[in-house]
Image (cartoon, rainbow, N blue to C red; front, side):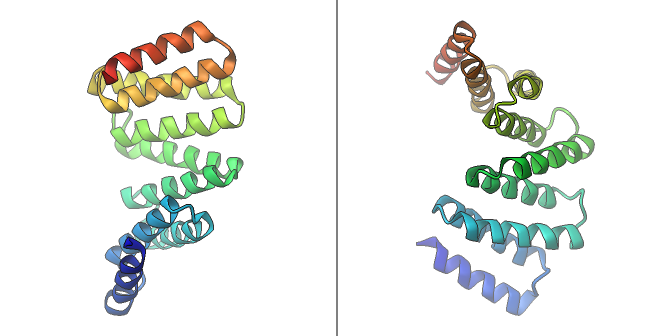
Length: 182
C-alpha cells in the first residue's frame, strides 16, 4: 500500500525540490526499500543505484547518507546473488565507515556483519571470521551481551561455525543467542 504514495512523494519532490535535493533522494531511497521488501529486486536496485550516484556527486563519498546507499545497494545485490559486487560494496562501506565513524560505531558493526555475511555466502569462511568476530566483540563492548544487535552478530558467528562443521562451537553460540533472546 505504501508504494503508490512513495512514488507520488518522489514525483512531487522532484518537481518542487529537484532531483538532487536530499529530501528527494530520501524519497528515492525509501521507494527502493519498499520495492526491496516486496521482492521487486531489479526495481529496488535501480532506485538504490540512482540514489547512490546522486549522493556521491552531491554529498560526497564520506557522507552518512552515501554510506547508507552503498549498504542498501549491497543488500539488494546480495539477494540477487551478485555476490562479488555486494562484497565490493560492503568492503567499501566498511573502509569509509571505519575512517569516518570509528571502530565502535553501530554502523561500523553493521558493515562488519554484512561483509562477513556475504563472505560466508561465498564460502570464504576463513576470510569472514575476523570480520564477524570483530563485530561480536565490538557489540559486546559497546552494547553488552544481551543487546539485540549483539545477539544478531553472535548468531552470524554461530552460522559461520555451522558452515564449517564446527557443531559444538555453533551450538554454543546458538544457545547463548537463545538465552539472550529469552
